[in-house]
Length: 358
Image 1 (cartoon, one colour):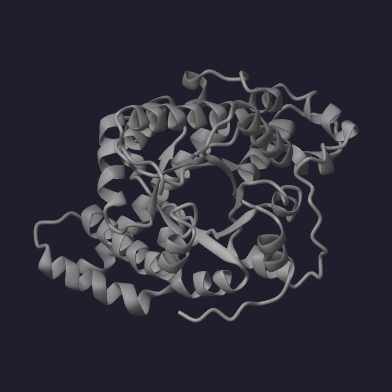
Image 2: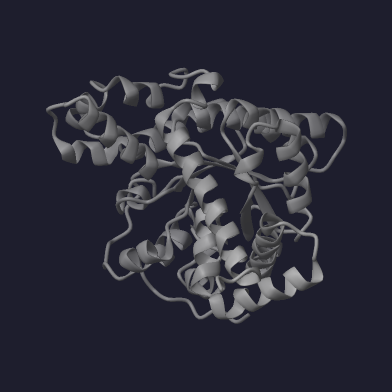
């Protein structure tokens, strides 16, 4: 594929800083455009996969009908997940040249483990290993839950490049980054290759913003609402610097965009930013001049507001939550429920193809 690059802030940042741009969608058309902006990878989750399939019904509904005929004993879920596999493999091909050029550090396509397996560490690791074999440049998402931590270390030890997901806080990022590190060190101790592995740890900054806003409303807090837009940024900056200080080899990844600061405030860091394509278009059309801001602290008056909210402090301090508390953290519950609903929506879409309403 010949790339015609599109000038703009995203391309400037990708060329002048170590900050990598990934596209928050596996849609091939969006991914091609993201690559023209300097994009070098892509992320996906059940909600995004469902949206991609739903937006390209002309392609995927006939394929669902074909799969139903070829797999007469398959459940709706099995057919739906086969479509997700095929969608991911199609998108992964677009990134293979980047994968080869960057020796596996970038050029990766994320596919997420089934959220219905979230209570079973072995099942998550097994599926992660299976997904990693779909294409050589696949990276697999596993949630930052108490069970997911075990699966993350296990899958990394098996040679899977992991993208930690359902992660909104510094303690989740640090704990899962250390789990990846243990998996890498176990492979190294056994003489196994890690040279082309490219793990990342997502921190869904926008979803942390969402949760802190819900908490502020729930608790009738009288505070500057604009300060709440900075919760995710503050956590992302703290997580990045913790990774640097601890020597963790996985990179932090910024996802779940709610404002442009989830990109602009992180530029300059050796990390990944993964905006949805609409945010990339907004940023690239803005005329913004790239500035390295990863080391710029969040303003003291904003931090004072945020640190007055106990739920933010839990998410900001590296030891603010135990792994068991990850499971009941509000953003975790809300996100897992959303992913489960996306799975149910995909089941419904498949059902409507193979068993249409009379």
